[in-house]
Image (cartoon, rainbow, N blue to C red; front, side, top):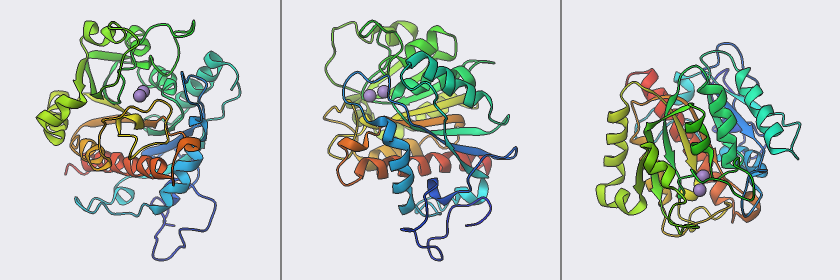
Length: 313
Ligand code: MN
Ligand code: MN
């Protein structure tokens, strides 16, 4: 293992060793550019649980990822000092609000300038992460998901995995006019369920619109609209079709292929990504680890987007 890079698969057996993500060094330092962080929490799910096991499964799957992007030839671990920050110590896993407090405190303690790339966990974890990242100034959002996640009360609670972007907008953590929700589909509880997205000025791109306009074309137009604006990228794996990503809590048929998901992230190259997450990987529902491998590959793709900007590629 090099000091900042992932493990060299030609020299170090990938099937051995306790896994850190990509074989990265364990622990964040003051000069860490990107901290990969596990958030083993699924206390906000509305249906199938299991995302608390996501980080450990994604770390194990990441042993399959090597060091150089096959297309762009970007080697993110040579450009960025990356580290595995471990899992957020969640002390109150029976209490949703208190657990969110644990998560927010952890992100607030990261060194200034370190970009967090998080491995969930259910989508409710994005609320405390944005509370830490968007406190000083609201950020733009690229949100890839089958669902808008701007629902209201669910089972008597406003804070669940179906509402992070409504909560974040209401708390002034994100800019609705610079929030792009991509891949939206599936049946609704009622016709108004996601009206908050439209009424607050978010851009909602359905899966049909994505394919009609072209995956890369949509990604590039979003990147162009963002320019240098700091943007948070949030990827819910249920954006991908359950044929490719069965291990998730709220699957919806008719989604992205794995390749299209990678291309969508890749097309954001140039964006000023100040944080990202990959959420809703639920290993108990996974088949053969497909979803965890997809999540690990998406994390690598996001690192390449961050590295491309660092190098002004
Ligand atoms: Mn979703
Ligand atoms: Mn979601």
